[in-house]
Image (tube, rainbow over all chains, first blue to last red; front, side, top):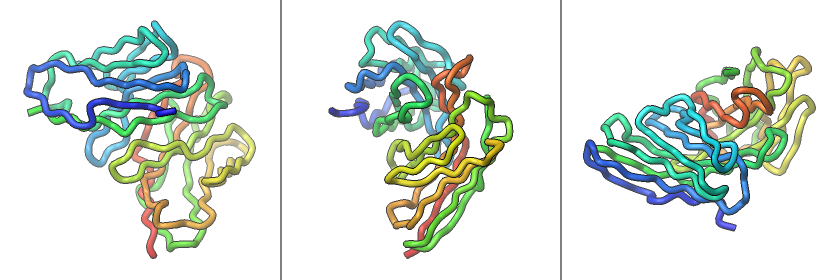
Length: 114
Length: 113
């Protein structure tokens, strides 16, 4: 049971490049989310999904796309990287229902856009 | 979105109890109170959650006020490994914010040896 796996752990992009941050979970969790964390700040929700085929925007969705074709995977796509997207990105998953245990977070992807 | 208010920082000595407060005066009846912590250079880690009654687990205890407008995370004996940022979060069980977590800045806990 690997939990939530994020790849890559580190990435440097040039402005304008595109890339996909991968997130996979093996716990059969319905809910998955992407967050970004800037230095000294709390996490901000980018996109989330309550099940395969269902996604919605969070607080800061601009410049990012997501899709959820399977329960296990929830990739985050940066369409045209900008220096403002330099951040640490966390993926998280949770069983359905707030009465259950909380979200399990991945170890993060540290992205630098130059 | 329901908001929470926490002190920016707190300090404790090792092996002493720590009480981390959180105010959530706009909480709705279906919001669960969740606590997470984030150690340096790691992703957040779930600690505990509750709805109305006090809760205990191996990591901590959660005390919830009778009116649910505040709660306190209790670490019974702080260790150096408990030094982290602690986040108090309201998680909706239904409605437009179903399943989402909204993080504030949390409380930075410093533990002194």
